[in-house]
Length: 259
Image (tube, rainbow, N blue to C red; front, top):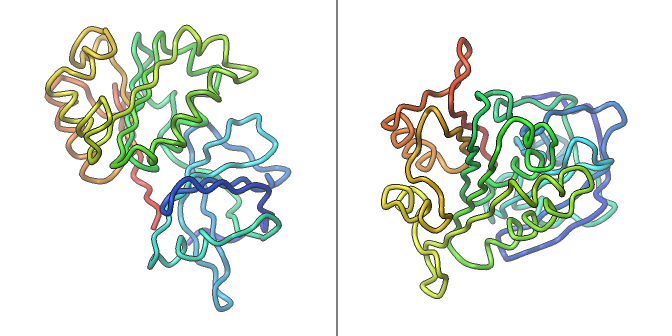
């Protein structure tokens, strides 16, 4: 377990549904991170720290840190974290880590940021990083959830990206947002993102060349284990290779989960 190095105060909380919320905290003075990384945060329970990995959703230049969280009623951490209030303290490790980084994949014409649930979190920082727009020509964020209210955070994020003081001008021309729902027939885009990719509907809806091509497409994955494994199969079948310790590939995924 990462050592607790900071105690930071909560500055903002926004609850979206009974199972999803975001919160902002003070940023330790010397804490640096790269867009897409995560850090260990937690609470002290019965004198012991309970820590979990959380992606930092706020951009590198932000004076505070923001996180997007699920609420698990019997989760060791989130069952308690969901009740925090402005002014409360949370625990934080001293270093951000993670491999879901724009420079972890080759540059290319199209970057796909694929996510389910709270897996959209790291893209909050990546989409507000100027380097992302310099490295990729067009950037597509997809977010798939069970119900329409679960999309509220990514819908907010799409607006924030285009209003961003550093990246907004680039985003107006290069950024595209796409969502889908799996359990609400009233939404116009139905189904898991993997099914929408296989059927070609994702590409048709966006009006772009169908399929993934290793000469053109770069992909970042952040979602459930099932989501990651299924997307890996699709990408590998299309000829894309995963970044590893020796070679930079066409796609990369994050393996950290919150519970």
